[in-house]
Image (tube, rainbow, N blue to C red; front, top):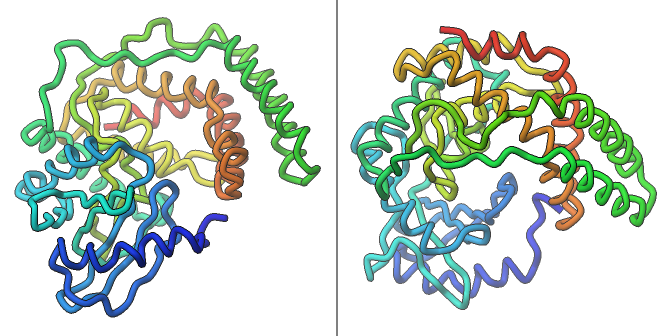
Length: 343
C-alpha cells in the first residue's frame, strides 16, 4: 500500500547507508524517515552529522537518463530557478549504484506541497511565471539540442481505447467484488460511451502546434515545495524531455487545478495568464494542446492499470477522480478552452 515501506526495501536502504554516507560525504546518519507521498520512486530524509538530505532510490527511470537530467540542475539554480542541485559522489557521479540499486542525494529543502485550490490567485499567476522562466532557463541549460521538428504526439485510436476498456472490465471482474471494482466497471462502461460519442473530435494529426523545447515533464504540486507562499524547490526531474510548451502548460493546469472532479477555471485562467506574460504562447497553440490532453485522458487508463498491477489504492482513487473530471471537462469544453486562453 502507498505510504508503507516494504521491509525488504527498507533493508536495501539500511545496507546502502554506510556506502551512501561515505561516497557522498554525509557523515554519520542520526535519523532516517521514509517519505510516504512519492508515487513512483522511494524517498527518505536523512539527518546526518553534516546536515539534512533527501535520498531517492531510483526505480522508475534508467540511471543514465537520471544522470543526464541531474546534471542540468546546477545551471538552472544559477538562473534563480528553485532547483536543488544534487550532491556529487567522491567519483564525481551524481548517482551511486549500490547492490543493484541507484541512489541520488540532494540537500533537504523544507516546505509543503499545496494543491492548486490552496493557492491565492496571485500565487497561481506567479506559478505560471515560474513555469515559463523554467522553460526559458532549460533552453539555456538543456542536456542536449532541440530537434528541428516537434516531437510527434501519438493520437489515441478510439477502437484500441475501447478494446483496452473491455480488457480492464474483464480484469476487474476477475478480482474480488468490492465497491471500488463496481465503481470502476461502471466508469469504464461510461468511458466507452464517451469514446464512441466523441471519436470525431480527436486531434487530426500527430504533429502538435506551437513552440517546443526542454520541459520538466511533471510540473505539479506533488513536485513543488512551498514556503512562505513561494515555490522554494522544484523536485523530481526524471521526466525531463523535449515537448511542446503548450503540452506542459495544459497538463500542469489540469493536475494542479482539476480537483474533486471539476476544474477551477478562475485559477486555470490566472495560471495561463502568468505563463503567457513571460512566453507568448498563442491562443490557437494552447487550444491545440488542451484538445490533445483531453483526448489523451479520454483514451488512456494508466491510473487503473497501475492500481491493478501494483495493488496501490492511491491510483484507484486517482482513476475515479479523474474520470469525474473527464466528464465535467467534456460537458464544458468551450468554458475550459476560454479559461486556458486568458491573458
